[in-house]
Length: 206
Image (cartoon, rainbow, N blue to C red; front, side, top):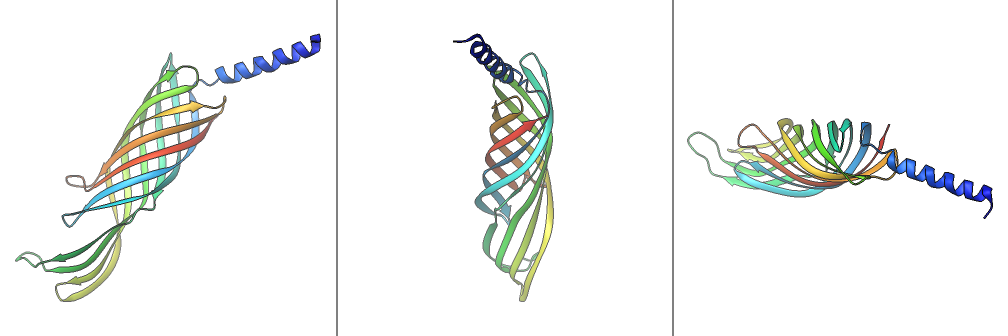
């Protein structure tokens, strides 16, 4: 093997090694996520459940000290879920009867929080996360309230929290993939909505 060939191979090997080691899990990053979502919602004392597709994008900033990583996160996401239920509720002295269908469809979710991670080997980060979540939904009613036919719709906003855990794996100095589970609860009283989501993502570091 010629000196030139040996030098070339050595240079390429050094570049590959430096690229792999340069991923420090620190600094700003952006990502896109997609996965599955299972939502349960309490509407008029009836538990409604629906499985759907979740998609979104976000970003954050990480600071690494030793093998410990602390970061802030933000994300906006949407789902295809549509929680619907059919009702036949008798009148009471306080409320009229209702017979018809009620649907609650999630439109978008805003999340802001933090994560704490630990570097496992050279290329993988395990982490836990938590923070505030706001969910905007569209509710619709189609039926009879008392003896009056009603068909109406409106929007609702729920506040709550999200917690989760996941793994991030560096593909190169700037590119990574991730897998994450998260659980969230939102609502004014006895949280009216729960979501279990499993997502995967791809992102870049700057």
